[in-house]
Image 1 (tube, protein in one colour):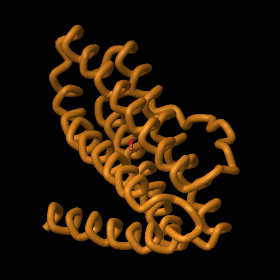
Image 2: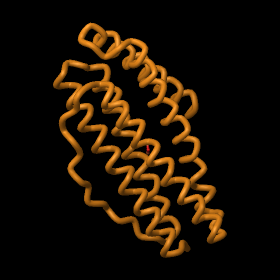
Image 3: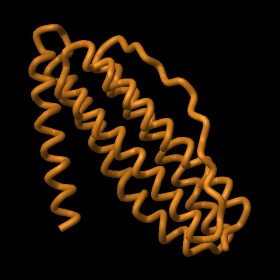
Image 4: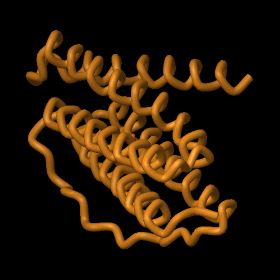
Length: 174
Ligand code: FEO
């Protein structure tokens, strides 16, 4: 069993994760349109991950006799000014998600819901990694610069970052 309050808070989290998936997909499309294949590939992978985050909560709610609501997703922006703006927005969105996870944890403590608290531990770790990743990409963009001459190098770097992230994930699953 899960409280109605917690059920509703988790459904709100489903909305945030679903929006992140669409948001990053829109960013991937913009990068593709600019010929930035590495960044597009990275953002496609992030979009799929976010859907995974949403689905974990879906299944959890079913397991605890709650009801997972399939969310209506607002239209994300389709145009961006630069690759730097994209990763500033990714970082901001990840911070918003972290704040929301922290609110869920606060509800767990308030309601003595240690089952949901245990479930959410995975998200605490994941958010630490995702914020760190977004911040380190932004640092690299700031270092390399995002002028026309630098875009090729940023794009190559995105391919490397994606490869490293995927290798780490495979290692964690093994
Ligand atoms: Fe699922 Fe990146 O927040």
